[in-house]
Amino acid sequence: LLFIGVAAVFGVWLGGKAAEILQVHDHEAIVWDEFVGQWLALWPLITLATWQVSTYVGIVLAFILFRIFDILKPWPISWCDNHLEGGFGIMFDDVLAGLAAGGVMWFIVNGGYLAF
Image (tube, rainbow, N blue to C red):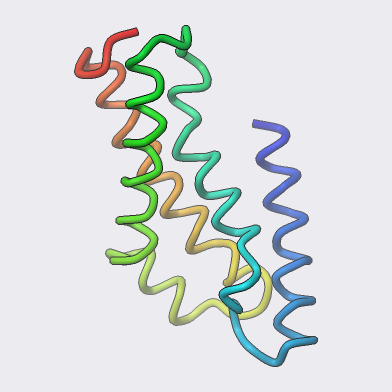
C-alpha cells in the first residue's frame, strides 16, 4: 500500500504539471492515474494470491471492473471528476474507481467466488 500511496502522491503532481503544460485537464496520454487506480483494484488479489489459474481470471476481472467504474463514473466518482480541479482532481476520480473495483474484488475473493 505504501507504493500505491507514493504513486498517488506523485500522480497528483504529474497530473497537475501535465494539465498546466498541455492546457488540457486529464489528457488521455497521461495514464498514471489509471495505473494507480488499477493497482487499487488489484489489491485484494495481491494480498491473497497463490498464482493459480483463478488468479489470472481475477486480474482480468479486476481490470474490467476498474474500467467499468472509470468509464461509467457512478456517483461519487462523477462528482469528483466534474468538481475537483488540478492534479488532485485528475488523480482522485481514478483512486475512487480503483477503490470501488477493489471493494467488489474483495467481496468476490472473500466470498469464495474466486477461490485460490
